[in-house]
Amino acid sequence: MFEKGWVIKPAGGVTGEAFLALHNNEKLFIKRNSSPFLAVLSAEGIVPKLVWTKRLENGDVITAQQWIKGRKLEPEDMNCDRVAKLLNKIHRSKPLLSMMRRLGKTPVFPETLLMHLEKNVDDALKNNPTFQKAHHYLKTNISRMKPIDWAVCHGDMNHNNWMLTDQDELYLIDWESAIIGDPAFDIGPLLYWYVPENEWNNWLKMYGLSLTDEVRIRLKWYAYYQTLLSIQFFKNIGRNEDSIYWLEYLEKIK
Image: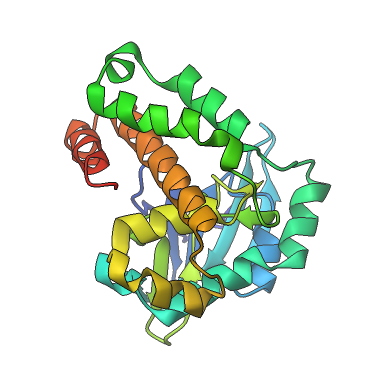
């Protein structure tokens, strides 16, 4: 895959599938089995430039992207117009939606998400009163979860997935959890996790959405859903402190 002289180093991350490739003054970000529509994300300016893609004999796909100098956004950075506007651009992108459909992706309804959650949460969490309260909200409000329109949703609004380069370019990386869904799938967790409630109207105005009662229900539904998934995810990979943190956070969702 690489000529002699290249040095490959782990680039961190939860999955261990990301690497930094170095050769003289050239640096590339290498990842195994990245999102299959990375080329469209690159063309839209949503992720760093895609340099090349190669398929290995075992079927794995390796992608190389431009290595960027910069930093991950801090939690307080999420409450800014640039984040809102980039997310709006993503949700309104026709090329992204078209590519997802060509890949055979179909809209994911809340009923499907709830079934997935119930199937993948262990018994200990199901018996937790805090979980049960959130799960009750999901079940009782599912009939009100009518999306305004379908969009490509990133699926993981953790602030660590937002990168600001030294050239002042903002990117949203790690698209492995992307789905076709309700834009609230992304907006709900972002607002609940990072933006004070008294500033939601301003953030949503920058995004281009009004905070109606129905929108508020959708935002809360997806905030609950994504938080519950995070609890089980961190539990599964042995990061119990993170799992406990998100379980305690459930109590803060009003």
